[in-house]
Length: 579
Image (cartoon, rainbow, N blue to C red; front, side, top):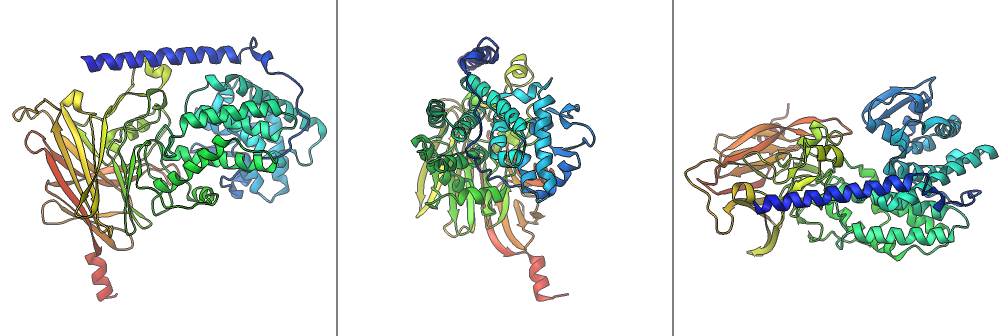
């Protein structure tokens, strides 16, 4: 009862805070407040911040032909202004209105791409914002400002004076609106993106000394608030770090191009974030799939890391972000050992406490399912559950409870209303090999159980030992006779992994496409069930998962291990007896 009351108080405080924030946001966007930020429109832009995100010249041809492919949906707008059509989805329109796609036109060598980019920006200035509320969502506007600044050489080179003035008036108007609403925008990544856009505009514009100092202070404040001491983002999302660095690194360069000293907080934040990108990176170059991170562009990660002068080895533990990294040979294990982020930042967080991922070289073996769909969709809800992660569930429940199906959820988003509040981590030594032991209380209130997981990776990386233990809460006892509680320990496999069930109970062979194989074994029967691997670039794919079922009343510990066994028997035979 006390725990339920605490959850209600936390939700009520969150609702009141969000209501107040949105009220101030409406006021600061109104005409009443608008005169605060006025003055002459800058005559020109001094620099254009570099866009280090990957561009694709072939997409420029689609855009030139009037074919816009965003959020997995293609729209043919040939002969019709694209901003005048009825968008197929909000996600599609957000990408359109953000103008990040301008970088593809810049990558094209076609002379028509320059005129096409200018024509599309002109269309937006004339009519694109009319009757399109999404166009002025704070994070969408911030992305558009950053895109216009970065691609200004493409849009403005060779244009007439009248268009240049219209462009500068529109850009200045958007920047001033962002300045008014920056502190009232949604907390977390959206607010930081807005502050980055404001700062980039100040650096790129002439005679903006006061604006530049104010923007620099805002940037330092938000970076200090959101970038943790170990370099992780407060949302606990690896993908958030990559997105931020893709904007912060060009901003640092822009300061240097102007001969200005960047804010010390900007330099410090970048220095802390770079090692965390290496921390979350698997052998294939992509990031781990935790807390909304799904596909990450390997080329962008490589570009970001090229700016890292230190190039130090990643640390083994990220205490403040709540993750552990175990390495041995070419094997990497990334282990989620932290509670969910604060409620106001948990709209995209997952219930993946004590989940892990395992890769060997450039091949992934054990994964989390990733993120899918738009916020509030059925697939997104599914991908956020504990069952979509390589960890244990009790009675098919998630370790965190989401705010779903209520008026508050529809108004404020499907945040995490309740989750593990105490996650303990201990590092021990087992005959010279480091072992990580972590536990969480996400099932304590509902089922009276604490889930504890112990991971040990050999020095060579050829064997991973794990123990999952379900113990009663302190002072409590799980009834042995009721049989009401059941656990399921899931190991989601990468789609490229083939599964072969052996005759020996509890033993399975997992084989990579190159023939390398690992054996999974447990002291419980192993069931092979269907799973799904979410991907926005290659499409969602069917895969498999290994599941250990049991009841803590009868047996409260499950022991399992993964061991490298070399080439599969089939490939060994083929090598001996070639066709």
